[in-house]
Length: 322
Image 1: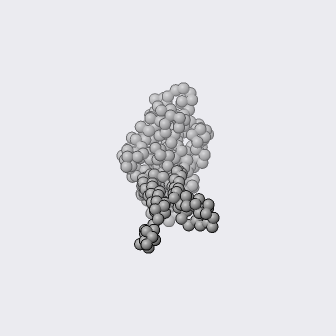
Image 2 (image 1 turned 60 degrees about the horizontal axis):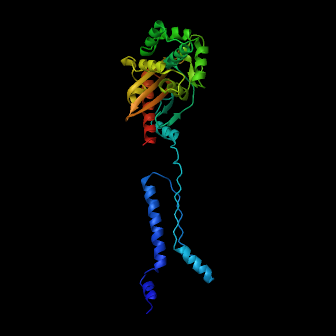
Image 3 (image 1 turned 135 degrees about the vertical axis):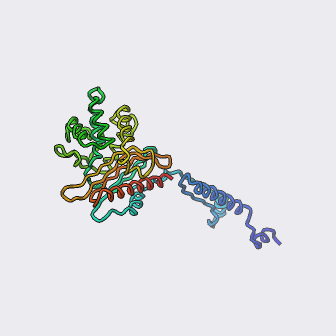
């Protein structure tokens, strides 16, 4: 009996076809291994030529030659960027403002550049504008080739560490009120912030995304900020030293915080604006976080909302980088 017929009857493949299948399996194994490693996205294509048939002897010979080759191509393409806004929205689904209250949050991981924003409404700043006031003062002082005066430093310390309103009003006048703030913010890159009218610095309007831009000016590096290293270090030091009973807000999302909070009961409604901006460290990574809220029935309700939003934001961005 013909030995080839015997092999086929018992399921054995001809040598040439068996070699093609082996090569195809090896190519697939490479692709599976690359996908399992999680390092690249791949597109694969394998050809055995086993199903090609020709009536021509020459064509059959050519096809048989093709059937012994297995081609696999791996194309490296960039992994899609994580949908950080979507992750943040999912995390914020578990944060429930009370009826009539609203909240917006923005977060950034400076080391990776990943960031996300939830909500785009404008809110009263209340006392978080004090960071912006001091940043504007320091920028003006830099332009004049000087540092802040002793009196300006005294005002700045009380304004940031103790949230002293009289000191804020004094420096608001020094920078030129809303016009001075808006001019500085134009250079800082804030596009949705407008200084309050007259002496009403606490009614400056802003967005969470704009406050994140401001935080990048305060905590950024040379080349990323209009503020000098000396100015940034000075402002950061004050934000790291707020009095204990004001150390709530974004600090709930981590440790190693530097922050400024704002809270204001609106006289027309009796409802509270409660805001918090700053830097925190969580799982060994630094995050910049800005949370704005309004319509809270009490300050305590607003604080709880802001802290829940800050935790959600850091958790969402931490998950995106894992």
